[in-house]
Image (cartoon, rainbow, N blue to C red; front, side, top):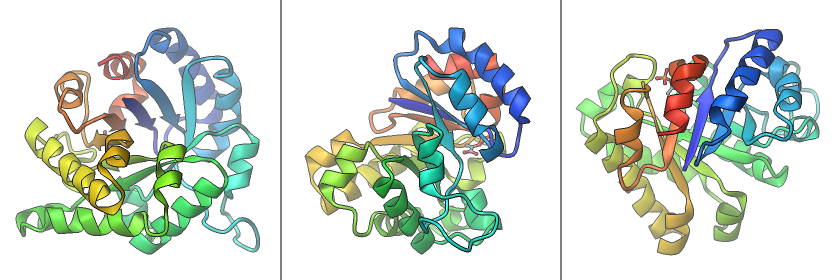
Length: 247
Ligand code: PEP
């Protein structure tokens, strides 16, 4: 089980440090792995504030090249160097607003693994795709391309996480039902079994994300193919994130 907060473009570095200091005692007893996904400029301070605790830190993006002339971008080694352990890759907002594609997501997964960062790979269908009845095809395509060239050993040793986030449920207050969420997480699990093996598929944490709240987390996380959540809005409130991480 793994619960990750995605703060998106929220909290200044000083607000971020104050916030994680508030989270530390609240999450000290969490049974799942707990991660906070914070803006680049807040990463170093947050890593420092969380040293010696059970809360890990994620970046929300990285560049797929190791270094070079990519003005404004951040490389995997830079993240590792300051103690970041996870990286969110291919969030639908990055796909929608910043031109990320299945191919760039795949490149970023390779780069993250090479740097020993744990990828949280996001996949999810739009409302239109759901209404057209192509959700399974979309999810299979996104997941398959994201993992192209990743061996079974790399998949399991890296503890790579897949987050199923239906776009229509992100930030809308419109959560997928437990059954809808589990159905797609199951499709991902079956695809992993097809691509790798049943054993490998069983080891991968598959999160649900999309309007997870303190009120619905427990039921969602109790579904058989859901191993935790990627949480946006509710991860910005300490009391809510505490309930979700302990669900
Ligand atoms: C997200 O951004 O990954 C997300 C799931 O957002 P929210 O929980 O606000 O829907």
